[in-house]
Amino acid sequence: MGFLSLFSKSPPALLALPSGSFTVDCEGVVLVGTVPSSFPADLVNSIARQVLAVFKDGKENAHLPLSEIIISYPSLKITARELRGGAIIFLSPQARYSPANQI
Amino acid sequence: METRHRVLLVDDEPGLLETYQQILRQLPSRPEIQTAASGARALAMLEAQPFRLLICDLKMPKMDGLQVLSIVRRKHPSLRTVVLTGVEDEQFRSRAYALGVDLYWNKPTSEQEITMFLECLESLLGRDAEEGFRGVQSKSLMDIIQLECISQSSSVLRITNGPLTGKVWIQDGELIDAEAGEQRGEAAFQKILSWKAGNFENLPAEPNRPRAIFKSYNAVLLESAQALDELQGGVSAEGTPVPTKSPLAELSQVEGVEFVLAMLPGESRYQVARGLENPERMAKWARESIDRFRELGHRLNAGPLESIQAQGPQRHATLACQGKAEFCVGWKHSMTPDRIREMMKKVLSLWVS
Image (tube, rainbow over all chains, first blue to last red; front, top):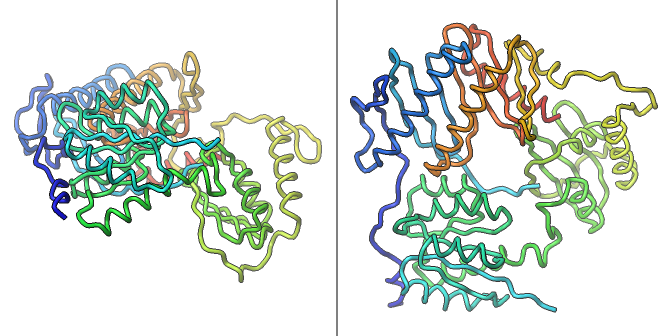
């Protein structure tokens, strides 16, 4: 069974979807957060940018002021609450997928 | 002439690639095994020639397995994909399945596990070639039922289409019953056949199921197809014209709905709205929001965007995709988030049906 020891190897680490929250100001600057530091900052900033844009465009362009948005993916839920032009954003990984036959 | 399937193995460790190659040579169908030491190389090879199966590691430098699978799912939707990894985290298993992989397998650590892994691979490779569901992904539900009946099968087909679920009972090659919501028998069967896409699974036969459909399966399929054609052509089964109705009229009657905006595929992403005086602004916001978070989902490898639920002091809105259509549904402020979720399922199921 010697060759079977080959079936294990150390990193490169795989990027896990984080569980945690962070607060951003109206410019998208992260003020405080509990998202693990291993999660890339550019992805955190990207989430913040998209969330702020949806709040801003909803209010200014669609006349739809919003206080909260919940974005659902099969493996992640993002909940964002508006905070005076900024936002507090919660990230919750989900686990509810299994394979299926498709017609 | 017998064709050999091509299998592409992707792992960043050359030693492991060699070992896997040797293991995969034991597959009874003797596929042609090719290897790639990086995600980028694998994508280039997939562009260059057709493969039947991709076996991909998750932990790889530069482009990890989830990124590879995300691209593969979009560019090569018919390619069967297997994750072979040492990662035992449930989150990654879930994310891989969300990206549409056929099989997620932890790297085998015993000969017994290797044997089981090979059996699963052989099944994946041979499913189209040997079983009764050749090309099943491109077939309609009518084709699948015909195949079941022609092969004199006894089974129960459970069909789901978004929030809708139906069952079709087949006994010794005869269609004996169907169920969709409150409906049973032929009416339920016609309802199920009107669904354009979805998932199905074969459940064990139920020989004691009372028969509710007494015509032959051919007659039922023919009549159902005719009824669907007539409905689509604007003529009822009795030959009288069916009054044309806005496709959104019924949706806007759902409890709590203030407006419905459907954005349909096409060059200008054609839209129809009900309950909105000036839908252009709302449509622009909805499309941009969906595009933003769809793209973010790809970057995060979190799977396809399911919905965006937005709540405001005046009204709430839900953005969602159903098939190729995108929706923005406005809700009364009095609706609770749970109620909105429930009613949104109803809106989407009405659209589908």
